[in-house]
Image 1: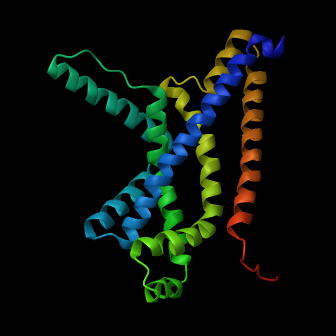
Image 2: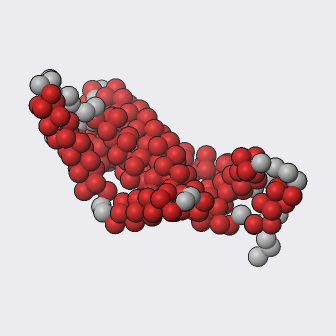
Length: 229
């Protein structure tokens, strides 16, 4: 029998991991873009907020942050419901995992985007102003597309880290790939085998991701002459 009867559960855990990674990537992308814009173009308040966010998050281990956010928010909610005399509200592990991973890696995306924004030649932005483009149009037609080309290698690295970081959510009770393979390993007495299966699944996902990232880099490099080495 395929994987001692745990094949369907492993597939479900893999799909849960993929959903978690993609949703976390979306949150991290948005927070990273806001953080980079706050650092480069924001007023003093948004600059200080972005600076504090990226500095603090990158200074604390991911596992510690996940535990602090999950259990801290749960404790806060319990205190509020107790004061209001309401029934206890339990956090959904998937939503909490998405918000936590997205919040953590948004800080890393912010630095990636900041460097990419700075790599765009200022002369092109000035040319856009000279042609009468609005700031919104300059951002959407000139700045953002070129920024993405410079940011793609960093985005790719961050995505792979986010994908692997989804393994951390098993500690908050989400039935992801890691938790399911651990449970299957304990139940069947073949822990090494099932952990190896989890590693092979992650390897397959990262390989597919690298192919997609390679295609995106080619797409955003259209019309750009590569330097001869």
